[in-house]
Length: 437
Image (cartoon, rainbow, N blue to C red; front, side, top):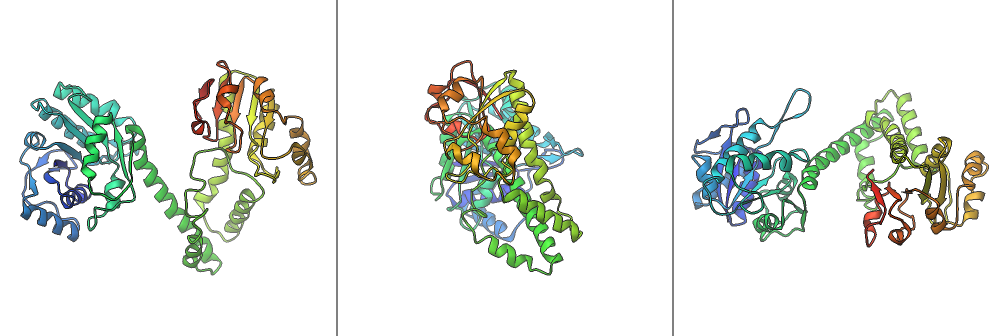
């Protein structure tokens, strides 16, 4: 395929070099980061010696050339990759001036092109930007319609960056956010020969993925640095601690706990985190990230209460107490706290959980938290159908909840609040209304 690449910074050069190695022909268009103008100087910008070598090899083979104008780049290519990226305003918001300029000029070029053309955004833009802003600009300046005349996709920068310039044939995954199936099918042809799973999803999901990846990487770096500082205050080798920490691929370095859900609790996590933070305070070590965890966790409970309050209903069913089977430990259970807080606000709350026998709840940890036991025992019912039938709002609070027959049990006038993200795993969508967490 012939691909035009707009923006020849690091991302653009990685993309161009990888595409050439995959057998595509490239037309490069340099974009001035300040004004959005298009440069026509022959040599690409110096970035990385490996990139320079690959680009020079591509140019000498005739597979890479620089365009003198936008119109020719668009007219002579099948796909346009936008690798220019937004800058930041003083308040942290995105400055899209350069990208707007790129989109406008691509749109003007499309006005004279009769063939279908695909535009792929590789730079990071916030969710809603492409469908709500760039698509409109393309329509206005081309006079053509998305879907039929041109396609749009998002290819998060992580897909290209992960592939590497030395071996672009391998990548952890390729993500394509597509306007429609034709857009996605066309974008997928770029990756013929790449040994990687290809994920096809919506444009907004792909837009968000760019930021989730960056945020998580920043969180990991900050977490490791805070642990390193705390270890150093004890004369402990933080590098060694984190080396052993990373050996656990079941919980520590894995997808475990990386799904949106409800607040954490139990006998261990809150206790251990409080102890670690208290020791950090004793050692005069600032752990800003770790200090924010417990307040953020508490906010999840407050948010759940707000969701219930917005329904305007008073009869609440809670499915799941979050216990492991055979381990009815109620200590610092956020679902119990949610039930107690709703009860205190005047709501009528009923609870069902299939993981443990009811007697387990009434007999465990009575000495440690008799108040919680006394308050919660009267709310728990062993009958799922009865709990749902007598409610107006059904709150799924645990992934252990019995929701397999939720569609059959909910009526059209009941509201479902899924705090655990399990309703999407049902074979069909629940019948009732859905309140998004």
